[in-house]
Image (cartoon, rainbow, N blue to C red; front, side, top):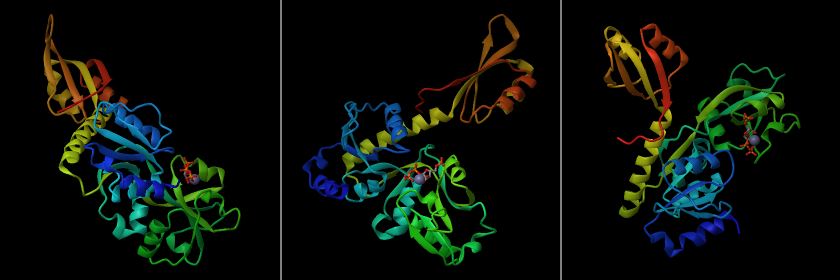
Length: 310
Ligand code: PRP
Ligand code: ZN
């Protein structure tokens, strides 16, 4: 059974009105593990078997559909699922190819993982100066929609060859002069003698939702998003503790990265020093710690935050 058939039979299934929110995530691939981790960090515990299409949360009214990332938009537009975790590259490609069908899918939250870019790359011998260099050339890609849109915006006419995978071998086999593919570490390009020339899209994993959600599901959705946003904030935040001479307090507060109002407490036996505790909503770099030290801070501790709810 292919996924299209699954979609039809599942949407006809009365269990869709069972008061449980349905989320579609990638079954295997670059986003799948981190998508599951995010749900688990949000306190949602999934039953272990992940080789099936459906995975139920037993402590939250959520069912998780494990599908091909390419199929996630269709799971939402057919209302089999109401939310999904998908790469922006995949979503935007679908929206570029089928604008009417997928226009109503809304990106509600960037998730900060699965970062990559969609780039044009050429063989090392290719004399590339700007996108105009590609006029009249052949470009292989799995992202015809996004590439065609980009070329049209630049008024460049080129031939696009659609390939499902192994796009990086197209120039070597003379199927194309250039490629347009996802780049993450850049290793694939290097090992195929290709040079990245132009990023046409920056992408990361994103939470999407349909614009049709029954009220009971909407309430679950808001609870889920509140937890997910709390997880994302905690991931990006640090708890910082340090000791400060009283007269350096204002200068130290000014150096603390992204922290609104630190807690200042007396230090036993010291009337010239205080302890400062703060939540910083940014990464704390070594250089920041050195700045704090130079401003008079001592015993500086930076700790990860596990959970945070406002
Ligand atoms: C993507 C892309 C490149 C590779 C880039 O393929 O098509 O092949 O990742 O990553 P890198 O810059 O870290 O080397 P993916 O692994 O998603 O598989 P696919 O091409 O088979 O879909
Ligand atoms: Zn690839």
